[in-house]
Length: 89
Ligand SMILES: [Zn+2]
Image (tube, rainbow, N blue to C red; front, side):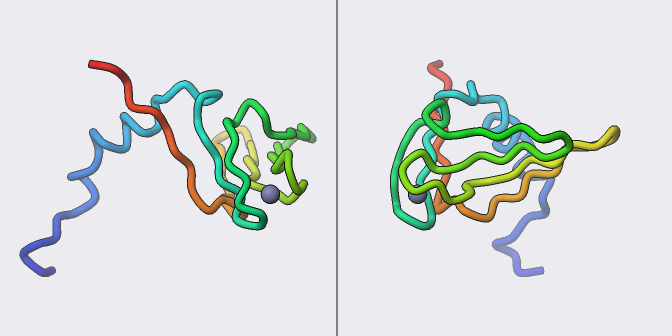
């Protein structure tokens, strides 16, 4: 391992902060059309075990959450990026 690298434990705090955001304020950017919108504006189809989130502008899939008894799997196939506001200190 190069000296400028650390293992994944080093981002535990950062990842905890990223995953602890208010989800509806998250901004999505669609990989297909580039539309930028808050998550609350997306179109959601909930068919257990899949929850499919689509771009409100073009209808393409942004991401899918597959839920089982033991885990959630987030399949991020259609997002160019996901931007979350940081909590205010
Ligand atoms: Zn789109």
